[in-house]
Structure formats: structure tokens, C-alpha cells
Image (tube, rainbow, N blue to C red):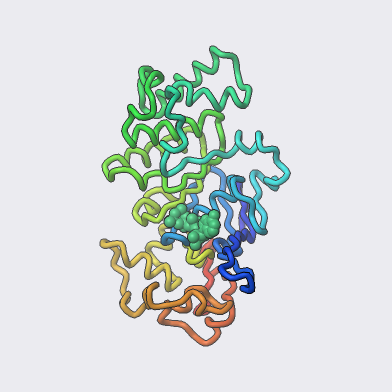
Length: 318
Ligand SMILES: Nc1ncnc2c1ncn2[C@@H]1O[C@H](COP(=O)(O)OP(=O)(O)OP(=O)(O)O)[C@@H](O)[C@H]1O
Ligand SMILES: [Mg+2]
């Protein structure tokens, strides 16, 4: 990576132990995230995209500190997050969830929900806190009366606005948004995405944006990492990857966008149902589905190569 990022992830791995069915069975693991590395520049949006179960959320949870990595390194503003106190991490980095309802206390009014992070972090006087809450309420598009509403009195889109407002109360510099609009109607999705963009330029926020929705990722991100079964197979500027995908999996993934004119036949790929994950035996995880698979793809893990500036790919074809 040519430029030091504000957020840097190096060789991140998470293996979940699989419960043994019989006591003599060997201990096995789900390799949810394997050797994932990327860096996010200050003020940009880096996207993680890939189909369900590829390890996007696990990556986000590890960076956020909610999940301990099996191995690897996470640096925030050039400091290893393991060496930063929890309180300081929360003041720098926050999370926006897919379902804000689950994280909003149903018994508390919106005003309290927004004030709470300031209380926990012992920030400001009572008057100043109230002023901050009012400012934030306005910033996310509400009027003062919303302070006295309860979460169940809000629509899904309004609740997500509260989720975003709460995430911003401590003035963090970095936000991890995990599928922030996938639970919302399409008409509301654009409003929330635009709000995230507005807030980003106002506060120079850095985003890690996680989504399986290719159109949303295209709209939001500057650079992306395409994940397949725990690994980033291709990484680069979103425009370049969408115009000129190189990895066979990226081509397959992008071919599902109706407006996309990618010149290849997706029927030549093997479907997930036809293959066993065990088929790759230490080689490329996409090998079992790949129509271009060669002998070495079966056994040798492809190294990550930079095929053009900041365009990385892990595939033996390159
Ligand atoms: N707590 C856990 N214990 C065991 N396996 C887990 C656990 N959490 C996730 N996994 C597995 O790890 C892999 C990655 O899951 P993860 O939730 O990170 O994927 P994702 O890309 O976010 O998927 P989605 O798009 O469905 O949200 C999956 O195979 C999943 O089943
Ligand atoms: Mg997820």
C-alpha cells in the first residue's frame, strides 16, 4: 500500500471454533476472515462487498473492538488499537448498525438516547449536553420535538437517523457502517445514504462501509475490497473495479447488476450449491467455482499482486 492510511488492517484473521459432534473428531474452525489487509485514507469511504457469509461483519466487529481477532493488526491513526484505551477508541470510532432499533433503548426518549454517550464519557455540563443534542437532532433532519419521542414512535428511516446521530455524539473521526440501509425501503435508502455523505463532508469523517448491495457500494465508496470466503480477492478504486473487474469472482458478482454490460458468460461458473468448500485444499478459495481454474489454483494460495497503482488482486491468472 503506497500511502499510510488513517485506518490500517494487516493480516487480520478470525477463526471460529466449530463444536465437535463426536469427541474423537479433530477440532475444526470456520475461517471467517483470513489474512485481510487494507488501509483507509482519512476522509474516504472504503467498502467491503461480497455475498452473505464472506466475513464482512466479522471484519467490522474486529476493527471496532467488539470481537478479538485470532491474529493480525489494526492501527487507528498510526496506533495499534490494542494499545488504545476503550474510552479513547469509542471517542474516535463508532458503529452504525443495520438495525438501529436493537441498539436503541425502547424505554428512553430520543433526547436521552443521544445524551447518554456524553454522560458515559463525562463530557460537558448539562446545558452544553442539551445544546449538543439539539444541534445533532437538527443535523440529522429532525426538529426539537423529536427529543421527546420514543424509538417505537419512529419509522425505520427515522430510527436509522437516530442511530447515526448517536454514533456522532462523541465527534468520532471514523465510522463503521454495517449494512446501514439494507433494512430500509429503497425510497428511504437514498435519503440515509445522502445524509451519511453530507455528514462525512461536514466533519471529514472516514467510513468503512459494509454492504452486499452493489449499487449502494458504487454510490457510497471511493475504494472497495471484494471479499470471497474470508479473503479479499480484489481491491481498488470503485470506478476502476466496476468498469474493469479483473478477478473472476468480481466479474461474476458484478454481472448480477442488471445495467452492467460485462462481456462474459456467467453460466460457465459453478454455483455454490455444486461445490464443497473443502475442494480448495489450501489453494484459492474460489477455485471450486472458477471456470479458469488451473492445477496450481487447487493447492497454492494466490499472492496479492498490485496490477496497477492501488489495484490489488489475488489470482493466479495475474
Ligand atoms: N459467532 C460465530 N460463531 C461461528 N461462526 C460464525 C460466527 N459469526 C459468524 N460466523 C461465520 O463466519 C462467516 C462470516 O460471517 P459474517 O457474519 O462475518 O459474514 P457477512 O459477510 O457479514 O454476511 P452477511 O452479508 O450475511 O451479513 C460465516 O460463515 C458465518 O457463519
Ligand atoms: Mg454481515
